[in-house]
Every structure is written in C-alpha cells, then in structure tokens.
Length: 282
Ligand code: ATP
Ligand code: MG
Image 1 (cartoon, protein in one colour):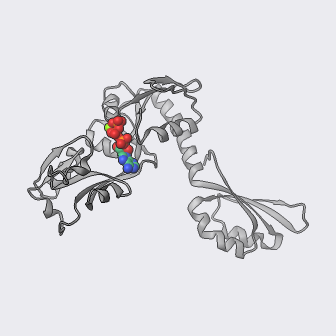
Image 2 (cartoon, rainbow, N blue to C red; image 1 turned 30 degrees about the horizontal axis):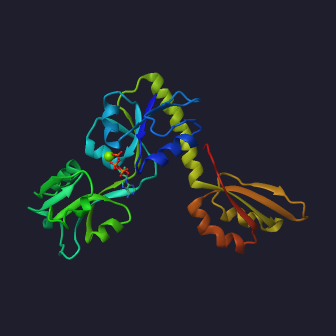
Image 3 (cartoon, rainbow, N blue to C red; image 1 turned 60 degrees about the horizontal axis):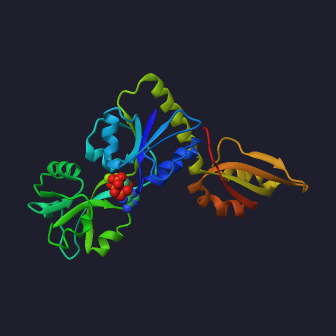
C-alpha cells in the first residue's frame, strides 16, 4: 500500500510522527521522494500537498495525508477517512482593517485574492454574492496592500499574519485540519491493510487524549476518590507498604484531569502522578 504525505511544509513533521508512532519504521533520508517501511507493507511517497488528492484519485497512491481545505479545493474524487487533529486552521475572508463591514454584501463586485478559488466561489454563489476572484498561489495577504485586491480569502491560524498586513478577519468559510484520505475503491487486500493502519492510528489518538494517573490515599478515602475520577471502568487499587494506605491507578481524559484535580486533593489524594500513554486500545 502506498501513502502520500507532504514532502516539506506544515503537514510533514506531524505526518511522519504519526506514521512512526504507529510503530511503522521508515528511513526517510533527506531529499528522498520514496521510502519503504521495513516492518509494515507500506511505501511512502513524499510530494507537494497539491498533488496528493490527484495521485490518489488516479491510483498512484492509495491513501494520503493533507489539509481538509486542500481536499475541498481540489475537488478530486477521494474519501475523507479520518480527521487527524493536527495542522488546525481555518479558511477566512479578510478585509483592510479600516474598512467598515456590515455583512457579506461588502464583497459584492469586489476583487478577492485567494489560493482557494473553488471553495470561495461556491461560498459566494450560495450566498448570492458576485465578486471577482484573483487566483494567486502565495503571499495572498499582501494583495490588498499593493492594490491587487479589495479583500482576501486565505488560511488563518493565529491571525498574526493578517494583523501585520493590516487586515481583519470577517468571515470563516471552512474549519480545517489534517485528514487521512483514500482512494474510493481500494482493493480488498489494501482495504485490510488500511484497517490495520486505522487500528493503530486510533490507539495512538486515544493514547494522546488520555493520561495514566497514579495517586496515594488513606484507605477510608479511596471510595470517595473513585467517585470523583471519571475513569476507564474500575480503577486499580493496590496496598502501599504504609499501613492503612493505598495507591490508586486509573486512566483519565487530559481535559477532565484539570477539572477534577482540586477535588482529588480535597478528598485526600497525595503524590499524584500523571503519565503519558503511548498507545491505548479500547
Ligand atoms: P507544498 O509545497 O507541499 O505545496 P504548501 O506551501 O502548499 O506546501 P503549507 O503552507 O505547508 O502548504 O500548508 C499545508 C497545509 O497545512 C495547508 O493546506 C493547511 O491545511 C495547513 N496550514 C496552512 N497554514 C497553517 C497554519 N498557519 N497553521 C496550521 N495549519 C496550517
Ligand atoms: Mg501546496
């Protein structure tokens, strides 16, 4: 099976990291365009992200990792299999910050610079707005400043690039993140490999979202502490060498941990340890 990932850019490191955390060994020497895993039947192609959806539609690669924004823009026939939770960003409309904005009507008859003409065209049409689109492939943010356009439609994450270019975000068109995409009709053996890979990805994702928690408490406080912990089934309780004390082990969602930490301490928990989980199979 072949997976296509971005050669160098904002998706590259996290894509490789995910593959490695799935226990798939790859040596990707610098400048390599193709690499095989030594312990999983997977070949990795390193490509420009723009080419990935097309390669998958045309059967050159079977699966790939790209931003959802790119999938929507390219309009290639591929399946979005799974959201991967990294490279989160949004596609937004922005205008010079000194311009007044009272709604989408602003864009009627205006020039909009963008690298995402398909997405923005659909969005404007469905909202009954007609505008002129100027497709440019990079540095879209400077277009209004140099008189090329009245507004832009571009990827935003923190918004700092907009700010330094004197722009203000006024509409969000699409929320995006990295996604696993695949060919529409994978042959059965490849489908089985994909299932095996998905199993591993889920184990990695569950591990990332959860923590292993260990704490000590007097035996008469253990039940109260268990009732506070929103854990996985029943926690493990083991006696400590110190008479009348136990150690309690459980798995807890990272976000929930911060919500219950004060309650745990008030209930008598001591020596609380929170440990990362590498893989978690539910
Ligand atoms: P390539 O050379 O492969 O064509 P590129 O310049 O088109 O690369 P990148 O800038 O590396 O692409 O962005 C790849 C993807 O990362 C984008 O399609 C988007 O999904 C996501 N992305 C872009 N900018 C950000 C950002 N500021 N924060 C988070 N994710 C982003
Ligand atoms: Mg690109």
